[in-house]
Image 1 (tube, rainbow, N blue to C red):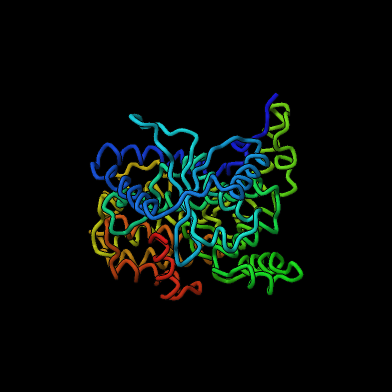
Image 2 (tube, rainbow, N blue to C red):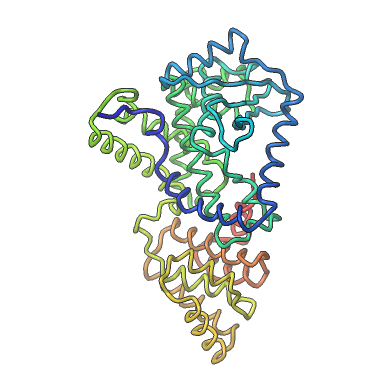
Length: 426
């Protein structure tokens, strides 16, 4: 018999992406001496905030909030909570290290801005603390995600690391939202208002005006439907879109894994609950970010390979970094050396410019024949940009190749520029 606890509600896709990300991170730690230094710089910035903060976890009102969190999660975590001043609502965390060791204990330092006490209800405060607590419990604080997304960071040039880190970060935020929802006793109204306050800056007075009949949740869910039916799919950023976050929580609120939280069940039943729980989340995520779920439904792998090659060839040569990125993207078993030789021979026969044009024209024809949906087109577009960035510099000729293909399906230059912007840290 097994007990369903907070570890069981971690989003499976986050774990899947981390399995791919972990070996790359280990490689960076071994090859780049400044990897650890950059990570330490993030911690120093956090500690600078801490130096101008006051500790509030011993205040009776705050103790009640922490006790409530632990009660709903059936846990006993210790939280050191500090208050600091900020122009916008903010919360951040860092693990406490055991002296003389690289291991962390079960304590967590959380910093919250003054909005935490000024503008949030008790359940909303629990939501914020739980979200930050989840970042520690699920190990997110040990992955320097934003550092990996920094375009100026030389460490981030490793193949498709940026794309992988970005996908992992989106899924890790979903895990924290699930944890937060359970911690506030599954109060979906509190979860919704917390999201709105932290993403829009609205205070309680403003929220009360626009949410007199609990319309806020309905409006956000309607916005989710609008996004799904939109002609242009949203870009990947470090946090999922707010309507999607609420939609996910609404979808899993009646799941048996949630309803049986804290209860003892047979192992096979727990596996079944968790599989259905994951499918519920996947169904909502797929409608917004189809490229996060590579489950065999993508019908444009051959087009993706051709277009990635066209982008790589746009400057008249094929770099090793570009070939490596293409192999990783398509998961091909082809020998990269042989692939390079085959392309080089085609370039010799017809010239790089003509070859790129022929590949693009062929890709356009096959895309129309297969009638690829918007999500598949966006997936091809994003991966082409990954190839363009793999050598450290996106060239205008590479963007032209991408546009020559994408414009045939309604994408404009500003749209492509916006997708490129997704690779920057938010």
